[in-house]
Image (spheres, helix red, strand yellow):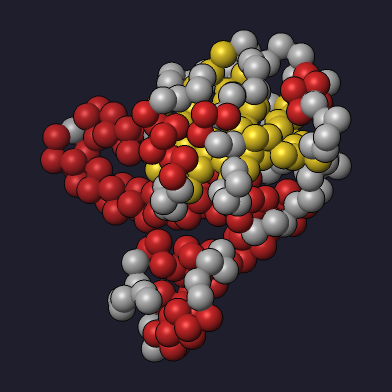
Length: 251
């Protein structure tokens, strides 16, 4: 049962249809009496719909990271902060001179840096959690997921071996980014828990990633780079696999 007022995580879960029917009704009642929060939630819902439409034709058209709901929400918050900061910068410019004020303005308007592997997290939400996109490849008795992946990413590293954690690769999905094709391989264990392996070209300006880990709401992403690509393992933070992967990463 959610608590009121709802947290930002509760609002995201509502947008992503992750709440129970009872919690959803409680939150809808609360939103009806809080118009400002309701307007924000509607904007998030529109962002999510746009992203699903964009990823639905991922193989026919270039991906548009500008439609990523997480980045859109971040940009809106950052734009609001920049408006306030710009006003402060004007006071600084008047008080200590034009040169110092101009330097402060340039720092204020600097372009924010995107968080690593946001597209891997969003792909997990759409494919693993919401089932929005069908698989391009399913493993059967004679299937070979590594061979399928090598057909598109010949120089990429090997698929992580997650057998010790109880996971086997079961399906693959091709996606696209502004920098080139990407792929997501889904792993499952005997209890239906899911972990995804995501491979994509390096980001803008050939950006490679140091080995790291971060949480985004209910998901954990462990990421790294090698052999010309960026990689991520994504799993729910409450999954038994999450802590195991963080303690003994298979990469």
